[in-house]
Image (tube, rainbow, N blue to C red; front, side):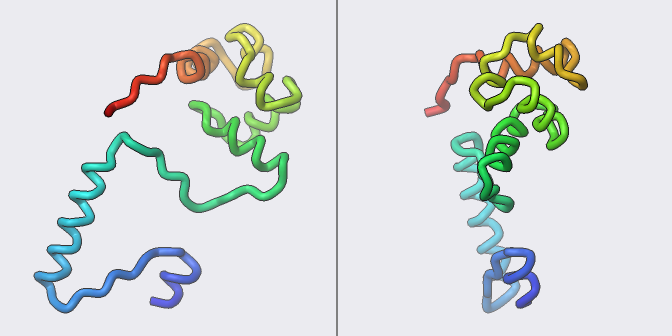
Length: 116
């Protein structure tokens, strides 16, 4: 249990019986349903260096992994320039085709519509 809590950072919830465990799971599920769509959790890895943070931000775009994020940043020079690049400019980077560039621009350009 120490391994789960300390190394894997999994919370341990104690209960007194099978029924108590079932009740806790139902309550947690209910809270997850209520919170769905209201926030995007960002658990786990927290980059410390500036370059890691820049790659982390660019990796938030659809279809962008660590290597492609690095290529985009190397090509454009900053996160702001990556985010402001047109579809055609994005396609100049090796690994970015028309479809991926269009999905990236869709996320960046679509108006935000709050669920509240």
